[in-house]
Length: 98
Image (cartoon, rainbow, N blue to C red):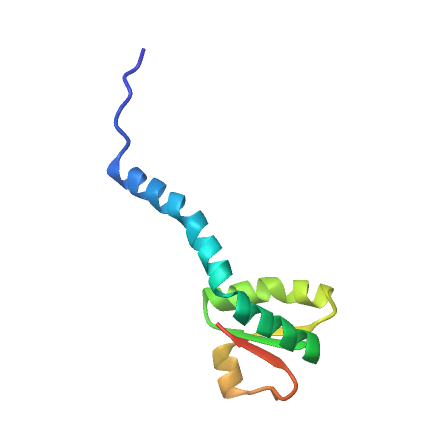
C-alpha cells in the first residue's frame, strides 16, 4: 500500500482559484446584466456589429464573429490597431472595444 503524500502547495492554490471562479463568473454575469441588455438592444437595432480588440480579446472576437453571423448579424472582428490605421466607417453599427 502506498502512503498518501500531501498535495503540493501550488496545486492547493490552483484548487482554491478554481473553487472561487464559479462564484466570480456568476457575479460578473449579474453585474453586467444592464450593460449586456443595452448592447443586445443596439445590435438588434443596427443589425451590424464591429468587434475591436488586441491579442486574446481579438482572438475571441474572431471566434465568435461567425456565431453572430449565424444569427443574422452582420459582424466583423478587427484588430484595434487596424481600425486606427485604416478605419472602417462606424456610423450605424454597434461597436464593442475589448
